[in-house]
Structures are given as C-alpha cells and as structure tokens.
Length: 318
Length: 179
Ligand code: SF4
Ligand code: SF4
View 1 (tube, chains in turn orange, cyan):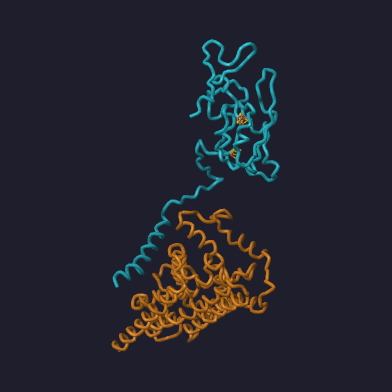
View 2: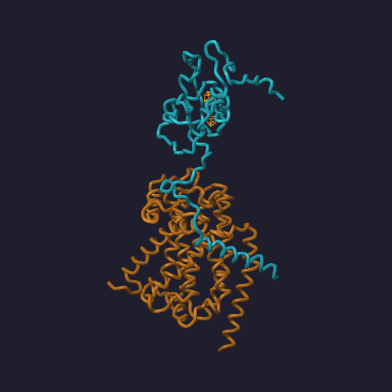
C-alpha cells in the first residue's frame, strides 16, 4: 500500500494522528496555560510531564461511568458519540499534504459546515437528555450560539470560495500557491477565526459550558468516558478549526521547500492551536447577550460587506 | 467609532500580547519537594519545647499555653521536683488540631514552647499526629539563647525567699502594675 488519497493506510494514519494530537493537547494546553500564567503546568509524569496524557486516560477510563436515572438513556448515550463522529468525519475532506487526505470532495467546504451544524445536535441532545437545569441552560445557549455563529462562519468563507472558484478544499489550497488568502480576505479570516472559536465553544466563547455560571453546562451530568468524549471532542474541534484556517487562509501545505509539505501544515495548524489556547489564557468570557448581539449586529453585517466587496472586486477585474 | 475600535479590538490585541510575553517570564513556581522554599525564621510551624542554657527543661507546667490555645490541643500534667520546682509530667500536643496560631508561644512566660519553620509534618496515621513530651523536647535553647526564667524571676530556696539574696532585687508585685 502506498500513501495516496483515500488508501486504507492513509485513513488509518490520519485517524491515529488526529486523535493522538487531540489527546496530546490535554498536556499542551495545560503547559502553555501554565507558562502564560507564570506557572509550570504538569511536569511530573514522565519527561516534561509528557505522560500526563496517559495518566489522564487511565483516570478517565477507570472512573465510574454513571448515567443518571432521570436522564433519557438513548439520547444521553448518543450525544457524546455524535460530537466525536461529526468532527472526525469533517477531517475526511481536509487536505493535509499533496498526497495526503481521505476524500477529494467537490463540496468540501459545504461538508465541513454541514458537519459543524450536526455537531450542534450533540450539545443540544446532551443538555436536553440530562434533565438538569444547568444542562438545559447550557444546551439552550449552545443551540443559540452555534446556530447564529454558523451563519457568518459560512458567509465569511464565501470570499475564499469566490476567489478560488471552488468548494473543494484541495483546490482552494492549490489556488493559494502564489498568495495566501489571508491577505485579500483578511476580514474573512478574522470573522472565521472568531466564529471558529464560538463553534468549538472554546474560551472566551465557552458560554454553553461556562463553569463559573452554570456548573459545566450541557455536560454537567456526564462522567467517565462519556465526559471524556465531549472533552476529546472539544480538542478535536480545536484541531479541526486550526486545520481549516490553515487550509482556507494560510495556504495549507505550502511553505519554503526545506521542509516536507505536511510539516508546514502541522506547523501552521499548531500555531493556531496555540493561539486558541492563548485566547483562553488572556480573554475573559463575554456575557451571553453580548455574544449574541456581537454576532448578529457586528459580525454578520461585516461578513456581508466583506462578501460584497470581494464580489465587486472579482467582477471588476474580469 | 475610534473609541469603539480602541475598546473592542485594540485592547484585546494588547491583552493577548501582554499574556503572550509571559511565555518568556521566569515562572514563580517553587518545585517543592525537589526545591526547598525559603522559610522565614519566624515562620509558625512545628512546635518544640526548649531547654534553658543550663540544660534544664524550661517548661514550668503553668498551663498558660493550654489555656491560650484556641483549639485546646495542648494537654499537660503538672508534677513537682524535690526542690519545689514544677515540671510537666506529660506534655502532649495534638498536631492534627493545632492551627499554628502561635498563641501558646506568646502566652508562655518561660519561652519554653516555641514554633519553628518546619512544616513537613504529614503522617499516614492520625494517631501519629499526637506528639508527646519526648518528641517535643529539644536539647537546645531555641530562639532565645540566654534566657533563663529563674535567673530573671528569682527562686525561693530553704531559708531564703525571692529577692532576699545579695544583689537581688525585690520581686515586683504584678498587681501594682495595673493601669
Ligand atoms: S499554635 Fe495555637 S493551636 Fe497550636 S498549640 Fe499553640 S496555641 Fe494551640
Ligand atoms: S510551655 Fe510555657 S506556658 Fe506552657 S505550661 Fe510550660 S511554661 Fe507554661
């Protein structure tokens, strides 16, 4: 078997790498947060605390996996599975390198957006089936936040789609050989970045699970590996958003030739992961209504204007 | 409009940059137990019973420390030597209750009971947190090297009361010190 798009080896490699990276982020995030807060972070287990991940895994696997008697069993179990599944599925269309990817889909961008919308069901079902007031509040917030931020997440991408003339993520990367889209589409990039934070409900937009306000939001009642899946799902979402930003705005695998393309992809994606962690370390969480009005009254018009201007320029230059 | 941009965009970027720079700031963490923190000499930690410069135990079993203790974790029993000097027959501190407030040290008239900078007192069994006199008593004078209670207060021996010997001042009637 060779490394080509869609071969079983490639699929296994990508799946393993993505889940491995998401697990390692537990450690990366805690150490980076530590350094940014003048602490050291976990450095006890193994060299530099690298085996902290293993310790956390053992802990989460051996914890009691408790389903509350008042919960709706079916959707309670379904919810964490959904988030893992949809995010892993989204990786199918991400082009990691010229010959590395799972599907070469013509509707890559749409597929990712569709999967992100399905991801909203996970948090909604999780909160609803828990039959707990905090979980319900969390899932209500999650539903509203994800539905509204999805709108201009999509719109902010249309500029890129218009420039490259394709919904295929691989072709979008190929179209950036001369110039990364972050330059002509800077506004789109910023909007996509913000919407991406909101979509993966990371801090500062972790309003659905805001610990200090509503316990843990939609996953208040979850424990053991079901909680672990939400947890890893969040990190997977982080990896996904970072990969997407890399692909859509930062030229995917393109970079100076002294490193193989996949390394450039990894470096860029990791830079964004680190940036997301920095966001968590630095910026406080807005109020729920501030988040909503910020989205609808500021980001939506901005993304529409961005799309209009991009369209006008493209038409003009033809 | 400018103010809005200043408040929303610029201030966030400045925040991010400020936090990012802390990557290059030395961390404040002291990696205890690999690295020992500096303990101040007056730190209120493990309690000891000290001896006077002559090597006699200082405690006179006056019970003032036990009375001062807010959590009642000191227990002692008075005993008397042949010359009439008091000493504790047993002296017991329950460190699982002690809050290291230092009131006992302040109450003690003889500087016998003292708190030290040692704080590493974890035990696996709760009973091991109860320290007896042989555990508490040290051979040295602790923080006060020259203090000997009886040199200051005087002592009554056979046929001589306090303050009646040569070069000895009469004891002060403490009740006359009332304001
Ligand atoms: S330090 Fe405070 S609590 Fe501890 S024995 Fe002395 S008086 Fe009691
Ligand atoms: S330690 Fe001090 S205060 Fe306590 S009984 Fe002895 S002499 Fe009195």
